[in-house]
Image (tube, rainbow, N blue to C red):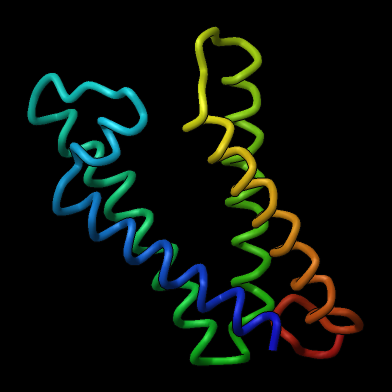
Amino acid sequence: MATKIFLGVNALLFIGYGLVCLAAPSVVADSAGLAMLNGDGAAELRAMYGGLQTAVGMLALAALLRSELQPPVLFVLAFLFFGLASARLLGAIVESGVGSYTFGALGFETLFALVSFALFSRSSSGTGLTGDPA
């Protein structure tokens, strides 16, 4: 049940945030202190914050609806969140002037990386990544 709740939360958060960023990239630009200097900047924000975030949410939704997808999707989520948190932590270390946006996102990504990994470990114990016997 914890896995389904976690995947449902991921689906709601990422699809919702992704669609908002796809429709209005200025939302994330303003929140994160980014500048869209031309059409390329807006397209980049739409792709990375709109398209990618929505795709992550759809991946979580697929695993919520099809239980055999849960272990591999949790594995992917663990790596995605770990990558985001690691890069954000590095950015916070080497840059000056980071604030609540960075630290809030770092906390979220770290927590979700740990939960993803814990749920993956629990769901795949004694099996291969796809749920087939090892």
